[in-house]
Length: 232
Image (cartoon, rainbow, N blue to C red; front, side):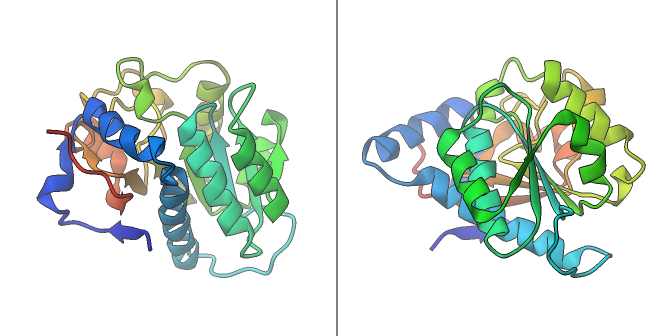
């Protein structure tokens, strides 16, 4: 069973570099361990918690989304999509906007099969009018060293930030807030990040998430234990 941990975290899972996380993942992935599914389990659990705590309270299912996911091209987007599949399977209306020309195919198909709706950029404001939780699944740790958002991803984040309801939204970051460097803690374009209510990080707490200015953007940190062992 996937564990979602709150602070204080086990010391052996704190302060990892991106290189250490990637190295620890490799043997597990080679052995066929379902790391993305474990991450998605934990992310979905936190999204459900945020829905339960929203001021508007529970609502009946319908087409207007309660969860809006912004999804990028990589595995970070895949984690978010599989989490959306789990939440949509609970009869929660979910909308997904791709911020890249292609996104994780299996995750996308699972989310749609569970009832999530794919939307275009022109529909984003309508989705924000009813959303309670925004899942930031645009960029993950692979963006370290080149963290700034560009193109459609940056446009989507700016549109969310400009929406009149932005201050009412719970933002759940997938592994890290997009636009943050998980190694250094740098935020190269601070006007184009979504400050998180909760950051759900996977495997280990990356060192950059505990360094300023990133730590102020991460909000509450939660850690999903996906079974990583720190490389020696």
